[in-house]
Image (cartoon, one colour):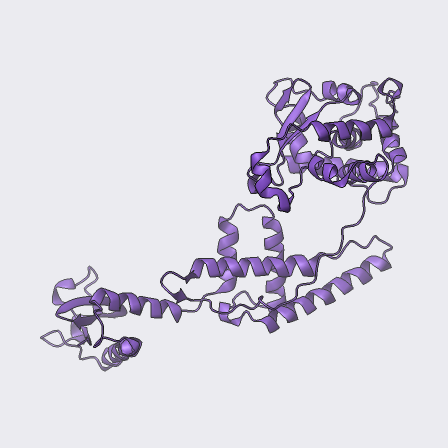
Length: 431
């Protein structure tokens, strides 16, 4: 028979002269004690250490009753349970009944995670908190209805932003907000379930699944940013800005002009990889695409040949320490600052060439578009050249060692289509 009672142990006086009231559980002649939140002093006790203060007697009785109710569902008479099993059951029931603050979990998760896209999760959480009007929300309050109201809130917010941009005559960006933010909250909620639901112990502290039948709108297609071959060549031909002493100025315009051409001729290599790459051997750059390297078994390895058109730029930006391929990390403290400078310069170039909101990623889009539409490269080769992963071929890819020959042959054809014979390329002038 299981007995539960409150007691105070005379031998367990604390430094501050108080005693903690314990809940004593006895079962099959075995005894265990649970600490409580109740602390009493000698004047609250009788000579034989029984509670005499009515306030503490009432609270201790409440706790005893609470534990008795927790244990009512245990088949004690018809099982071989031990007292340790009883305590484990009590612990599970207590945890199950303890509310979990979803917002606090999200904040803790964001503080600890190193996942890429962390800023997107933080922005989504900020929007969710703004929608709630508070920064506390138990997981059992995250319902399908609440998420539908959140999406409606985002739609209205988006409509207001569009109206303001239209008044100013500015470009309307693609709508990623509803899809991205709702998907981010869904991911955070699933992370909370991973942490708090112990399926092995059948301890399900977050039983609700508000996203199971929630239809999240698909993200709108991104704005097409591909440039024509003529525009790419015009970027190449733009004269550099020079200082009063006749030397080329170190400025975003000149940097953007060169890095755009570097990216295009290196099959859309992004700024983070230009900044970080460190392997140059036999005229080929080998790098591991920063954006996806931690999500792939091959670490997103890419090998691209340096074509003759790039030799002047390779020499110009050569790392004198030879630690990396390019010297950009000497000029900018982080690749984010490097990317920011490039896009700043591209805005200047865009104004000159009348290209609205020209971005660095246009080099990658342009390479792919020209490869398929103008050069006749098949989509599978373009897919591989952009270093994307084919989900249908993931298992097969484990057994295939890429030599990147086909991708580099495709790149040579695309570069030749844009720039023609390398010997006929105009030398960039200064201005």
